[in-house]
Amino acid sequence: MGAPTLLPVLMLLTAAGAVLAQPPEPASVGRDRPLTTTWLCENERSVLLNFHPRRPSEAAWLTYAGTRVAVERTRSASGVSFASADGRLTWHEKGDEAALQLADLPEPLRCRRQR
Image (cartoon, rainbow, N blue to C red; front, side, top):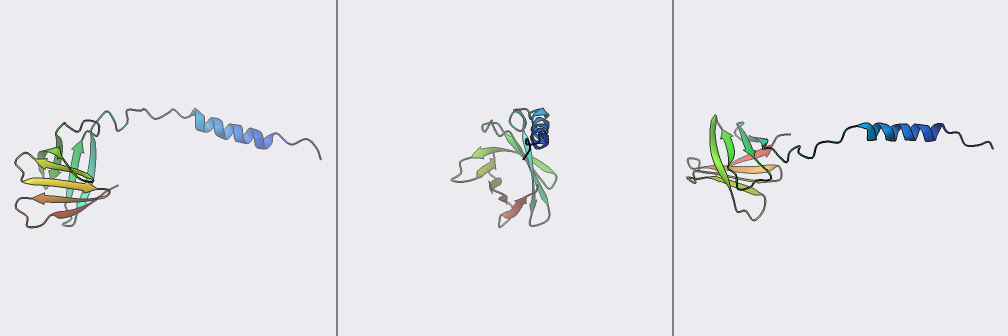
């Protein structure tokens, strides 16, 4: 048998170089600025939640039915919870599911995260 061909080795190095040649994603993406998540509720209305993931003490904003409300994080045994200062709105999310409780609704609205 002859000497092994260099073609497979060159192809592997070229592929590795193409992967390495891509610029790395900045570390600040999604960390140093607020995030907005979109949720679709069972009544076909959307909820937008805007918050800063690294600053839990900062106010967040929840928008529902054209109304934007400042909310603050509250303690939660699991998931993430927010509430308005007047207590008329609460939001609890865990994974891709959430519940929006409004003072004038008898039951919470169930919502799912949109991707």
